[in-house]
Image (cartoon, rainbow, N blue to C red; front, side, top):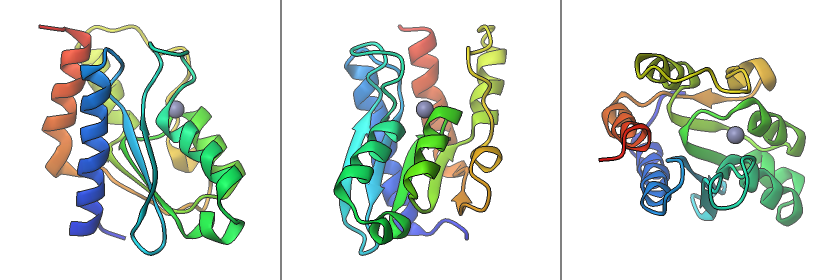
Length: 160
Ligand code: ZN
């Protein structure tokens, strides 16, 4: 499936949440859970500095969905996220039976930027969502948002 204007609108919200995280002193990642009817059910951003390093928004969404939505509602929902899920969040997404994922930038893009900026490899290998949750509908990246997301991560790496 390709990205339409509705997808891009929710992705922009996810990127806005990533910017909010950055403004609050946290790593710039944001995610939105959208129900089958297009309603926003839950949204969050990273709290890896404020709380602990596992506080990713995609994990918060999976845990919220697991305790608030019926299995059919989870399967029909879509998760929009500023950056592709890490393996921890992909696994939680798969275990709880959520539906389609749409990301603005891929883990491969983020990894390339980190390399270009001379950062060390992260402690967890950045597998693609498809390697962790086979058969899931996954769309992205969104070239329209690449520069904006890259700028947020650049500000995180090198605050001005
Ligand atoms: Zn994660």
